[in-house]
Amino acid sequence: MITDEEVDWLLSDLLEVYGYDFTDYSRASIKRRMSRLFSLDRFPSFAEFRFKLRNDEEYLKRFVEEITVNVTEMFRDPTFYKVLRTEILSVLATYPLIRIWHAGCSTGEEVYSMAILLSEANLLHKSLLYATDINPSVLEKASRGIFPLSQMKQYSENYIQSGGKRDFSSYYTAKYEYVKFHEDLKQKMIFATHNLVSDRSFNEFQLILCRNVLIYFDQHLQERVFSLFDYSLESLGFLALGSKETLRFSTISTNYRQHSSKEKIWRKIS
Amino acid sequence: MAENILSKKYKLVVIGGSAGSMEVILGILAELKRTLTLAIVIVLHRKKNGESLLVDLFSSRTSLVVKEAEEKEKILPGHIYVAPADYHLLIEKDFTFSLDFSEKVHYSRPSIDVTFETAVDAYGESLICILLSGANADGALGVKKAKEAKGLTMVQNPEDAEVSYMPAQAIAIAQVDLIVNGAEMGAIINNLSIQ
Image (cartoon, chains in turn red, green):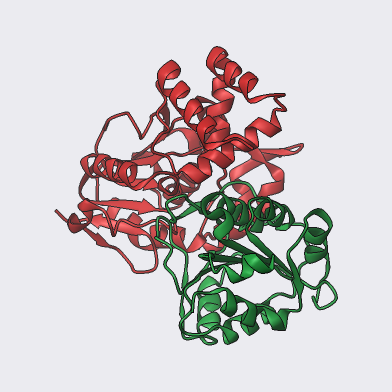
């Protein structure tokens, strides 16, 4: 178990040596992730853990990937996707070009879910899906579109619950323990690293999805990210958050109206 | 230990339960006095959905406020918080909640250990840590850490538990302060609260 003081040292090392600022992440979670990695990688002492992080850029990649949470699912919270499918896509369909930003997309499962929705609504050809994350290594995985076969039963159930009518397995080819999603789903995806803590807006979107990312940030950082999203969202655009996240307490909330009380989707009204 | 109990220094009770613990929790809630000054956090293993049902069910047994724990929410005395389904519930040092969708721990999300361990970090010796019936080792390590931090640890008597494995695991690895039957726990919690 790592102490609070040691957490502070690692946080300042990350900032000082690599320019990664995790100081506004929720502390209990980051401490738990660091302790977990420390025991997972079997360092004999904290000093060696710290030395490795400070001096090995390859290890930095692993470190950042492990202290951030990269657990995700396809069609996670199926009722959310059902609302996207039945209520939001028809609004997006009116635009000549649909720009969507998946902020903190991790290994991309939700981006592929969105591509499937767009494809079924016959909108994928005029859409662009920007998928960003702080970790280059998870983006690499996302861009390959290869996921474990063992997950497909769950994903298929989620897909059906979201209102999907096709055979889910028609979207991928299975080989051994993995499946590869078809290339046409990937055509409109653009993967890039983007750090919500320090990077700026890079485009305007009609839909921004950032689900289960803000729960890891403290209130100060949440507020910063909300401003970034507000700046990056067109008027009448939509912002979608995770099932336990809310815009309610944010200063931008006055410009937004919650689309439905059940799902965490807000529309920018001014 | 007797000194511990009389000192009334406690602020938070965390209760972890798995298979066979629902009736025990309902029994505890029914016993709690309206003037309770302790905050209570309940982490219950269960299926992904249906958390609002759990809050409703718990509310029907007590006049204290029962609600699902929300991220960044401040923990208030006399409130009962339920860990949401499919997230880990962490407790920060400023006595607020964080949620975390990381890997399952002991095949469980929410994991009892995750809440227990972060609660120990935040509350130390003002924590009361209670582990109930279950078929899983989740929670045992958290009980051990609570004990090491001089919190009060209470485990359901394995003979009284519908499924003895979980409380037995805690007893095996930690010097638990109290091993009691489920029916006695509500009164003990009341006595540990400031009058």
